[in-house]
Length: 113
Image 1 (cartoon, rainbow, N blue to C red):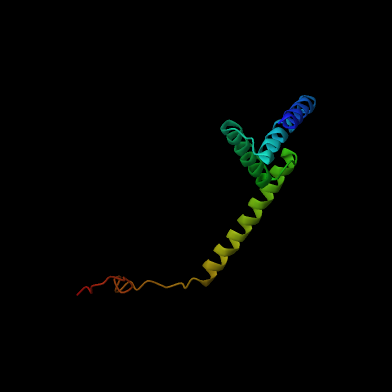
Image 2: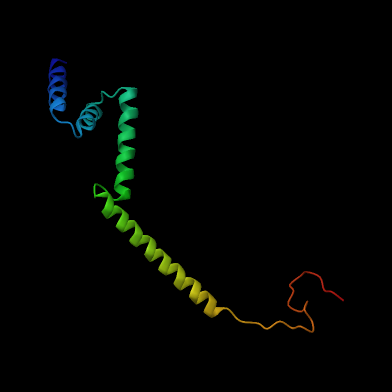
């Protein structure tokens, strides 16, 4: 138990010197040692969710790089959509309406007399 307190004090002192990632490191240590409180576990879960969200958005890249990449992806999807629409329009059969019998192309379950 004394060793555990000594390690905790050491990491607490190191965390005060290191600003970036200090909280995460202390929580990860508690998780590995099985000493997370409910509040610590909730905070650790929040940090992990934020990390996953940032990774999906492009990690630690600069904001400008992220925006450019997202715009590129949007452009690619727009091109794919335009190609699908164009091929759909090309494949569509043009029917000229029968003006003598306007109901001839109606698809209703009953027949008009």
